[in-house]
Length: 434
Ligand SMILES: [Zn+2]
Image (cartoon, rainbow, N blue to C red; front, top):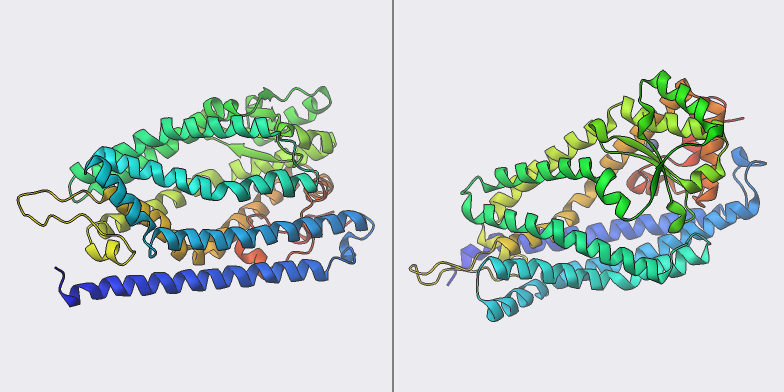
């Protein structure tokens, strides 16, 4: 039996968790209603600085699309909160754990089964809204190109990859938790970071091609300008690829990926269809700007610092009985000193993954701010290496083509936008006003 005073940290955690969940939900709800109202209020008219460059119908489509996405976001947010609550304080995770213990007894297999069952149930909970997003919302606005068949094939491939990659990692981490002593979290963090870097190396060459076709950029109209630009910026031209993004979506995109010898810039074919050669060069210069400013290195450093803090916290929390009890789970306890307790490591992992985002959401503005700063830096680099006029017309076409609203709510932007809104970006590009 626990003495009464032993329960006070558990009760404290329950309260802190409940307060953070409610506050976070209220904040997200406030932000999204602001966004919906702001966009609706500016729907009737194209903003003055874009007048003549963006048609009213385009502007209104963007408003409707933004609002539809935001409304779906409200549903997802509510469902997410209910799921977190259901798993923790309402006893879902505890019931699942006890049921699996009854079937297979304590041990590594039971813990892996718990992780798998949790992933399967969470996936099923998210399924209806994710199908709705693709086949109803994206479809309605003309962006979806996926068939149900392709969706199924993607899902199966993703599942298989998840099991092939995720399961051995989970087993290794559970083994470290049980066998590596009090500093297990440091070993686990090392393993985790090593795997992240390995995945970044193999993703472009081995994983991404499972889902899309990549071919080297070999457009004669583009070739000369692109080669000159790459040479100017000190890059080898081998890392330029075109991806058949049009198989799944009409949204156009370009991104950089990998590092070291594996780094590459990827253009969606949809982007090349929409832009002139000069505009493509400007977009490429922007992506090269991310390399030049070492944004990937920055991101890796930030990610490793945050995950080190996370693992250290988990290392400490997983040894505290109140961590489990306060979040609605009965931990395994050895009642007879001669017997070993059922291990709690999988429970600790799942509780941590469920509960930490509830607290870290309040950090979202900081991360979004950093990301938007990187975008401005890449834009500035593009202006220096290519043409500001091309960059601004390319950006305008991309915002237009993806039905991104030109009038987002400024406060919503601070929290949720990883890229600056069109007006802010164009304002900083010379010739972007023209
Ligand atoms: Zn960028």
